[in-house]
Length: 202
Image (cartoon, rainbow, N blue to C red; front, top):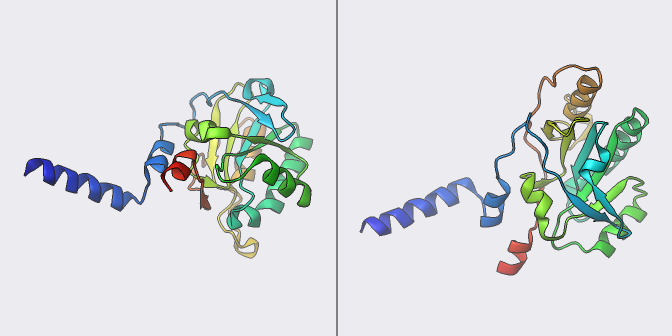
């Protein structure tokens, strides 16, 4: 009887949290102020890129999707941030961790939308798991020494006319000015990243 009650309790916890097993895995502990997990991934042309190769400058890491409508709503804003802040000496790299999106599909998406920044393919969603990235778009700001300084949303609204808080830009401006990031952790809005585990279970 106790075992049945335990199973019921676990089931209620999972239901209440609204997370699948892979989403729970994505909730690994990663705190602002800690070292950002290192990674090495190939870009859409098959060339390797590592996080440590960007050391010495602040780096924006953005998890994006070719299919997610919310990520697509943000693509122009992401392009604008990439253009502006790379001119200010910040590295910018996007990562696609969606297991249901192939390299060819992501490459075609990038070409169609004229995304000139580097996009890496995260096969097996290893980096998404390490960064606890559950949704697209979600962004991370890492300082020149490899320390995570901001993670979360780009701004407060999918509708550009309703944007009142440009969280990512504020964090970047504070970091570049040598100031502490005032709001360093926000809730990303977007589509759940489809993981390899999800495809295996479907």
